[in-house]
Amino acid sequence: MVLGLGLFSGLWIFCSTRDHLLSTLLSLEYMALIMFLFFVFSLFFMPLYYSLIYLIMAACEGALGLSILINMNRTHGGDYYKSFNLFLL
Image 1 (tube, rainbow, N blue to C red):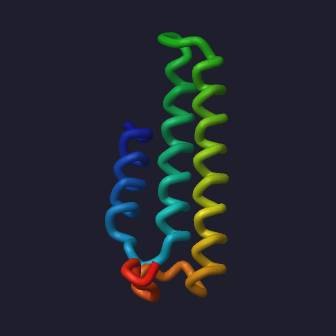
Image 2: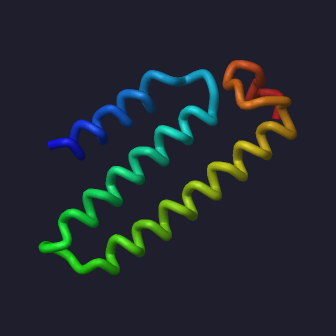
Image 3: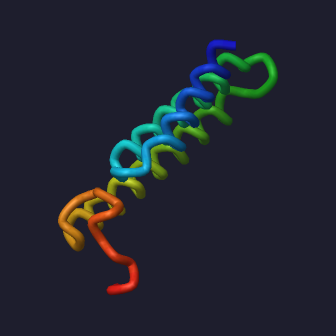
């Protein structure tokens, strides 16, 4: 129940913060951490290497998100969504 509440709160933060890319990425990483804890606590139903594979995929997702954030910061001057126009690209 606690993991469900944590996942719901991460989803709530993800849907409510639409101004900066960094806050969106942090909420996604929080949800990935909650899902990892769910996989670890459900050890009776699946082997532990599935949670390790999920952790590797979450780390790759985080690295991809940070690279998009850095690229957006270099090209548009920040991570504020409303500061750039997609039609000029």
